[in-house]
Length: 502
Image 1 (cartoon, rainbow, N blue to C red):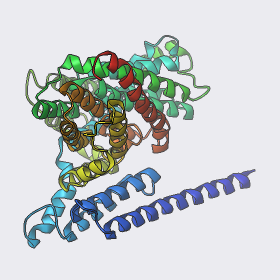
Image 2 (cartoon, one colour):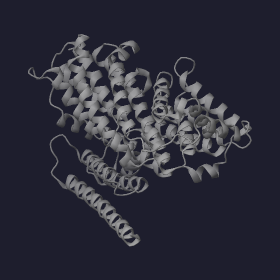
Image 3 (cartoon, rainbow, N blue to C red):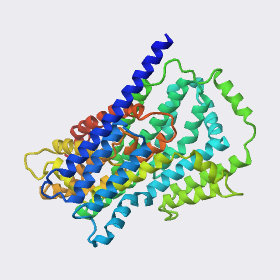
Image 4 (cartoon, rainbow, N blue to C red):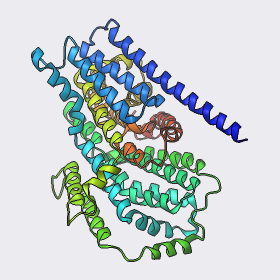
C-alpha cells in the first residue's frame, strides 16, 4: 500500500511538473508569436510588446507554471527589454533615455497607493498574529455564534464585510479589517478540515469586498472614476442613492449566490470547536487580560479605520498615506508592537512583487494604447441602429470580464474602457439616460474580478494569508463569475427595465 501511495505521489509530481512546463512553454510561444507577427493597423510596436507580455502573464498565472515571485521577475524582464528595443517606445525622448523610460514603466506600479495599501495590510496581519490579537478577536466573534454552526460563521463574516463597504472606501482595507477574525478561525480550527474552512472564509471575504464595490458608489475608487467620466463626458451625474438603487439589488443577488456556492464547499464533518461556546469562552479566558502590545495595536488599527472612514469629509489624507504612517508606527521601537526584522521574515514578498508588476503591466497596456486597441477590436461599434441595449450590455460585459483576467487594477480597467464605451454611445446618438444605464452596467461588469487572486488587490491580500490555493479560489470564482454575467442580463431585461432605463 505504501508503495502504491508513493507511486501515486510521484505520478502527481510528474504531472504537475509537466503541466507547469507546458504552461511556461505555451506562454513563451504566444509571446514570440505576438511580437514577431505583422502588426495590425493601429497597434504600435510598444503596444504589441505590452499585449504580448499581457498574454504571457495571463497564461502563466492561469496555469500556475511558476511561482508568483518568479512570474513577477519574468514579466518585469520581458516588459523592460521589450519596451527598450521597440522601434517606437512610449516616450518621445531620444535613444539614450529609452532604458530609463522602460525602467519607469516596469517599476511604476510599485509607486501606486494600492501597492502601499496592500503591503501595509499584510504588515498589520503579521502584527495581529505576532501579538495574538487576531485569535482574541476571533474567539470573541465565534463565541457569539450560537451553536457554532459553520453556516452562521460564514454569514457573519459576509455580513461584516458588507457593512464595512458602507464606511471603508477601500476593498483591500475591508479585507484587512476582517483578517483578525479569519486568522483566529484558522487557529480555532487546527484540523485540516478547519484549515480548509478558514480558507473558504478568506475567499468569501475577498469576494464580498468585490461585490460590495459593485453596490456602493464610494466603496471603490473605480466607481468614482466612472461617475466622474459620466459627469465630464455626458454632463450627467450619478448620486450615491441612484447608484445604490441600480446596483444594490444586483449585488444582493450576487451575495446570495456567493453564499450558496461557498456553503456547498464547507468541509464535511467540520465541528466548529469541540465543546461549543463553553470551550471557546474557556480558550478566551486562557488568553488572560489584554496585553499592552495588543492594546497599542488595537488602537493603531482603530485609528486606521477611523481615518479611512472619514476620508473626504473630515480630512483629505489619502488611504495609502494613512496606511504607510500606521505601518511605520507598528514597527517603531517603543511605540510599535513588532520589529522590522520580524516583519521582513514573515511578509509574503512574492505577493507584493506580483501585484506591483501587475499594476505596471496594466498601466503600460493603457499608455501604449494596447488596452484601447484591444477593447475597440473586441467590442462591436455601438453606434449601430439594430443593436439593442441588452445585446450591447452582453457584449460589453463579456469584453470587460475577459480583459479583467489580466488586469490587477479595476481602476486602470475603468480608465481604459469607460471612455471608449461612452464614445461608442455618443456616436450612436443614444439618449443620455440610456447611455448612463449602459455605462453603469459596464462598470458593474468591471468590478467582476472573482476568477484569480491576481485580478484584484483585495484577493491578493486574502491569498497572502496562505489559507487557500489558486485552484480553490477559482472553484468559487468561476461559478460566481458566470452567475454575475447571467444576472447582469437578467437585471437588464427585468429590474432595470422596470426602472425605465431601457
